[in-house]
Amino acid sequence: MHVRFGYVAMSVNVANASPSKTMTATQFEKLADREAALRKLERLAMENLHNTLRLLRHNRAYDIHVFRFSSKLVPLATHPITEGWDPFPRLSESFRELGEYALRNGMRTSFHPDHFTVLTTPREEVLRVSLLDLAHQVRMLEAMGLGAESKCNIHIGGTYGNKETALERFRSRFVELPDSIRNRLTLENDDKTYTALETLRFAEEIGVPMVLDLHHHQVNPGDGEAAAELWPRIQATWNGTGLPPKIHVSSPKNEKDIRAHADFVEPAPLVSFLRSIASQTPALDIMIEAKQKDSALFRLMKDLEGMDGFRTTDGASVEVNG
DNA sequence: ACCTGTCAAGTCTGG
DNA sequence: CCAGACTTGACAGGT
Image (cartoon, rainbow, N blue to C red):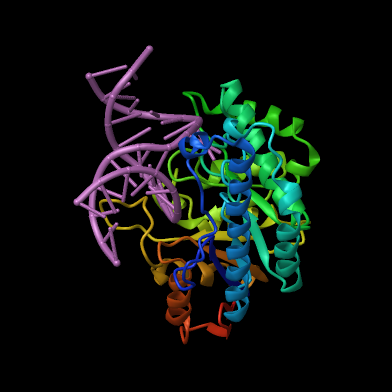
């Protein structure tokens, strides 16, 4: 099994390379000249895109082929305060350059809209802005020239006292989505509400790939099905996408705060999971969600080096014996 | 240079 | 019906 590792949005090793620089709505409002304020937002966005390109160059240098873009590349993009603003014309060259670099170097990229994006919500206004946000993220991927292999990964959402009616709302909204958005979605089990099994069943039903988060499964295991038991079905949700399945990996911050992410990744649980699925899984991509970002990735690679059945193939991937 | 409170956004719980 | 917790990087405004 060939396993590639990646990390989320920003590096702790590349200095001054934030991809999420922003301006508060209050500051935006204070500027008397709205056009000048919008130009300032565009300059911030351009910096974010430039810094993201620097991160991709860093990734290439360290053989990292899996990466999640910051969801805040364009500040205040869908905020009501910027209503009527279209940032894309002035950013098209920066977006294009970024996507071209990712494509040329065989990088798997994605977005993960924040937890404000909820398709189960009973509130019309929340749904409206959720769809707006999804559309914005898809438009960024399109501006980068990236195809449907670049996904937008979301959680199912809340329950509002009744999981079945919540899922019903998700279903009816899902089928109404434009193809351009629907084809990009993946579903991830969360740490409180929808377990891995529930997410899997729903992903199978509506026909989207599922991203398994091992840490979420650990803190929200449902009836305790082992991740490895669910794996064949989870893997099957990726059939026909042309992509290896993807999982998220992180470790609890401490015993008291088990949901929060630790600085680094504890290798043991991951190693045992990988060993148990290696024989049935040709390829896998792993997103590391740790506070120390790419440093956590580098440390994990060191930890895996020389482990029984593991062979490091480059700076950010390993071969695991089945 | 460094510190602290605040920030667009949702949901859930408890009062 | 409302306040607070959850969570997070970065701003804003202060020393």
